[in-house]
Image (tube, rainbow, N blue to C red; front, side, top):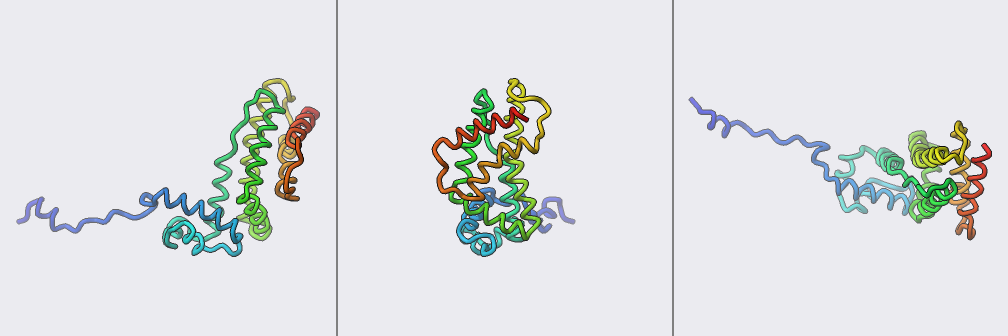
Length: 208
């Protein structure tokens, strides 16, 4: 007859289950950073899991444990940008808030990595509805959340009327700078452009 202590020594030990709980966050972040660098260097079409793993300093298995394909990896990274968002300006005036928003957004859009990645992913979005949906979420929701708070603050101060057309207001706020920085890719914005844009957009919003 065996004792409980003897049974515990002879009983085979269960291995701790593998899964998301054992994934190292620093490795995950290194892979995400590598995706941005790889996209900027070779573009989506030529990007590979091997290249991402090599740039992140990890094995391919580490990537595949987190994402099952490069498409899912890119969608996750791009979608995460929408969650990060932009800081909400609080200067005390609509024009001041728009000016600050444009300054922050302009720097982000003109960053060497972003200026290469966004056009490349837009080209892929025309062929891939999953990327198109992720791009729309990233580019629209990130700006929309901040813009809506700017408008709400201006309405509380009495600078803007209630009941604005949200879509039209969004087009007025985000369209011109995006056109300049991403579509026609102006090498350098003219001096005073952001101040003039903030002033013009303020007047346009007040006229709605």
